[in-house]
Amino acid sequence: MMALLMERGAASVEELSQRFRISKMTVHRDLDELEASGQLRKVRGGASVQSSAMFQADFRYRQKIAAGEKARIAAAAAAFIEPGMTLMIDDSSTAANLATHLPQRLPLTVISNNLSVISELAGVAGIELMALGGQYSRKFNGFFGLLTEDALRGLRADISFISASAIYQGEAFHQDPEVVQTKRLIVKGAERRVLLADHTKFGRPGLHFLTGLETFSAVLTGDELDAAQRAVLTEKGVSLHCIAA
Image (cartoon, rainbow, N blue to C red):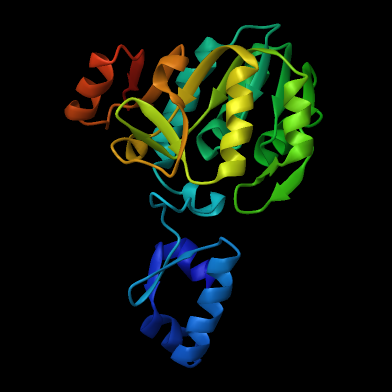
């Protein structure tokens, strides 16, 4: 069921029943279990893995959304990095794209709880990699919890790169409180902060407040962001960079 939902984003109970040749009652029971584990959200007549104000989509699904835009944002973000810097990179799918550009800016020290970043940079000569321990979350493909937070409190970086699942009226939000706590520490632990967020994140609120966008030295998104959203952020004095295709 999850593989089908990851491919399509949403499916009806009727469709799942026919696809897997099981009763609708069994589908409902399976969906209840998956919702309880945080992997999906039940909607009227079916289920969805798409983000909402209360639910953050699985990392595997988010990787597919606005993939080209996220790659452009990461390439632009790399211009903020200079050899010798210490970086913090969060768990987001957008920030994960940044790892590809780091070998061109050596030497670097990289601190991250993002498993994709850790896996890509492990063993790269010229990169001092500090992998943040903690409880692994398959949904977010990263490490969280007390161990992660304790480690972050003892570290400082020149610059941090994070994302947010929702941006509304000049403020960043996320649906998961544990993820919010980790992101706040990554923000706090750096001298400069850069927010990476594709245009789909803007204009909708999330459950938990993360930080105001004035916290960031720069906010990078794609030029797909509509004029109304740009105007809101510009009026608030946000350093907005819309990266062209």
